[in-house]
Image (cartoon, rainbow, N blue to C red; front, top):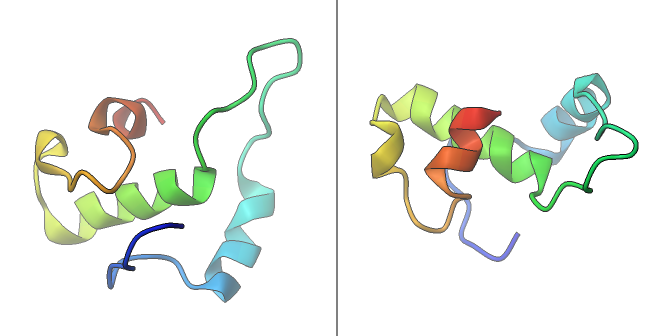
Length: 69
């Protein structure tokens, strides 16, 4: 992560619990180009702040990518 953390970001302990529960990338398909932890952090940011998807800060993944997940 190359950005300053937000209050809504997952802690390392929370990520260790959540990571195994996320589906793995599908075999035979293009590999993921996004960090799943950043996707979850962005979703948490939207849920906690109540902002519109398009208003997400630019240091998080693109809102279209996050919304898709």
